[in-house]
Image 1 (cartoon, rainbow, N blue to C red):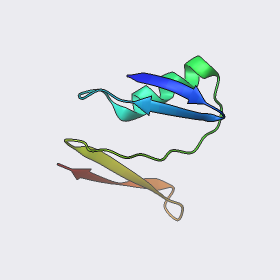
Image 2: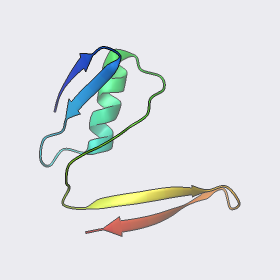
Image 3: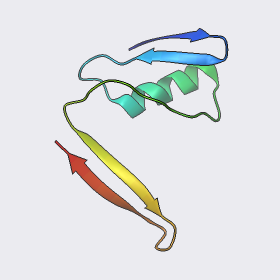
Image 4: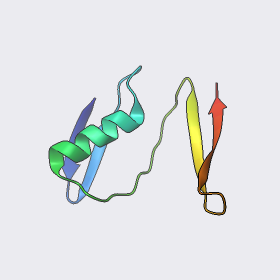
Length: 65
């Protein structure tokens, strides 16, 4: 994983096989980022998506291979 800051924006390149969320969290810890939004372009071999359901207080999970 490599990243750089340009202006107020951080650009992160995640290596094949690296965990995306873990890489983002690592940059946030290093740079003391407390709040952010995420926009991604690229591909992945598989993913697990979760959506918070306010009515139940739980998450709906879907695995994509």
